[in-house]
Length: 303
Image 1 (cartoon, rainbow, N blue to C red):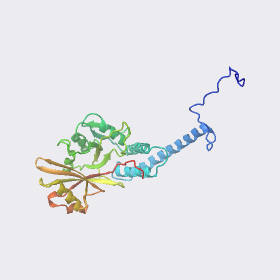
Image 2 (image 1 turned 30 degrees about the vertical axis):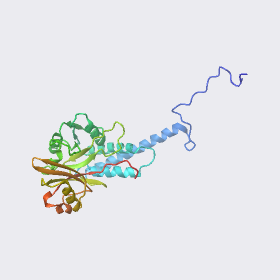
Image 3 (image 1 turned 30 degrees about the horizontal axis):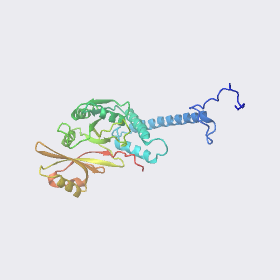
């Protein structure tokens, strides 16, 4: 027998709106109150951003050496990642602050980036865009020498170049030019990407950043040494000499071009030209040139 509790023509109850979650016991007022709270938070965030910009203006007037301080930027992001918790993804935090840092750098003067695109697929341009912000002017060039020339001429503040490899040909081994100490001196100041976990679709190329400003230390760095040495010096002897001097290589690239041997060596820590360990190397290695340093990229591992 059919129940008579509801007439057949009674309209069904309206389905719950996807926009209207049930009220939470600890948040009276429902969705309208939640949205009002978010609006208040947004206004507070905006007020803090404007306050931060005013402080940046004062920093710009203080006579500091450069608006672009990659070591300082790395320290800021690491500090925020260390204190971060909750459901907001850490990579979102990094993206927000990379855009913020790019914007405040641009406040202090023109800032353009020259990018070497050796294969024409925009992979290095994407990596530069990720790091230097959506609105920073980028200009792509087909060779490292062209991008480096823009920095030397002052038409670009930094250049993004492919990370060196031992298989590079002479044209692509751009780091050997830094051994000449030409004026203005060009230094390695950064490594990309700074945020190592790569979500799907993100650029995966490895790059170094160069500039005419000297690198600044972060709270975790690697330095790059360039060496010229005798052709008969083996990799083992080179490694032993560096280790004995307290400069154990983290990585090394060797080249022998036209009767000259060069090495690019990564060592832990932030080195300067005055580091006393440089004077203690085997005479066959000659005194190395500190080519620069970079903040070690974040791995995304829990602190």
